[in-house]
View 1 (cartoon, rainbow, N blue to C red):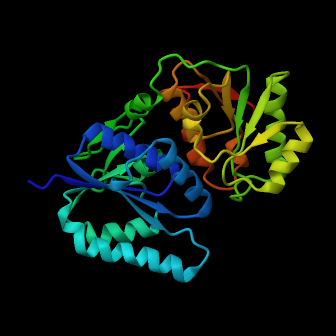
View 2: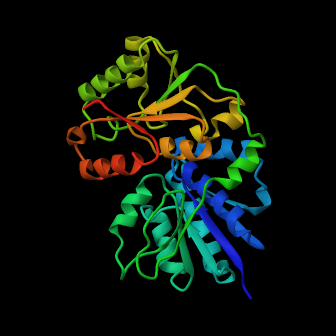
Length: 310
């Protein structure tokens, strides 16, 4: 029986999900395909491979982050040729997201006859699940509690693989409160004025706490400099996802807060004793996807503290 499996990841969180799936399913043979879709993701993915000490003999890297279009085209085309030659060897395939044009090409041309399971792509998983129906859906391996459609299978995990990597039950805490940044402004979803106003509301609520601002990898240098100058904050931009904070730093902050971030949910599952807070903004201020974010706040309210700053 062919029980070889293929796993695909294009972002740090997708890679975390893929590793959890590999740990859960324990395939006898597999290949983990990691595609560097852009330079910021590539830097974090490379650091994750090093930090988690991944066995590179199981990895296949596609570098689609090159600024040289010829090199990018060559790298991505070479993998498609590999898929053409070897895709029949694999019986089950795990894909990182439905939103990747490249992965959709791989799925539609090579994987039509395969069992496909989708991995978490952050909170986007909830939005994607909401778009499915009884007549059209894919199976999911996820950290979220989802209601399955007819003939859909959903497996929920609690970061069991990641806990084996931590190797300790009690993690020392510092007095620092971490604010997780966001790229709402950079993505054209929130005005600069509203972005600055909401950060000020969070800072006012935190009062005299020792605060560290951990920037999203998509935030602009100009905005981060303004935050540092205006609020006299220490601003850092880690080369690893915040979920790996304790693994890298050997400690946890006192609290993690944000306007909105997938990490709020994942951190609450990985570190149950960590205080995690979402500051709920007026989602009507968002220039796009306001309905989705209103619903996501409602989902998160079952798991973490929500403070309304509308």
